[in-house]
Length: 107
Image 1 (cartoon, one colour):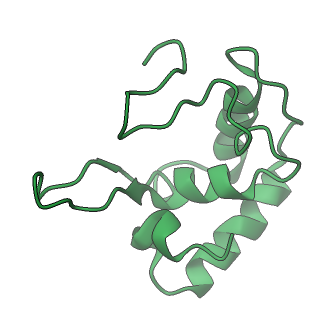
Image 2: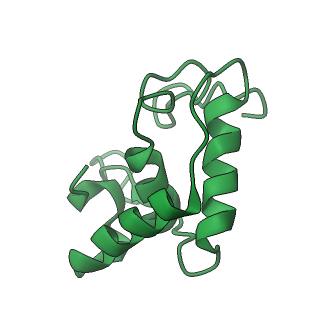
């Protein structure tokens, strides 16, 4: 949703989220890089997913996007550096499955 409030049930709100405003931004960086997929419930065999953007965005672009999300909609998170993104990107590649998103994240 445009106001950062998410969709009821499948998509958590970004506005006021403790994860978004956490001291370390590793979780959100990892989701931006690798995407995320919700579980496939029996009633909806194709779960919702957010695509990975790691293949498309540079470390600097991911840092800018993460910093924006951490400070939009009244959030108050610290700025994210491209070095922080590079460190998470390295860890994502170490797992050997960057397409697994938050399901196999070390964070």
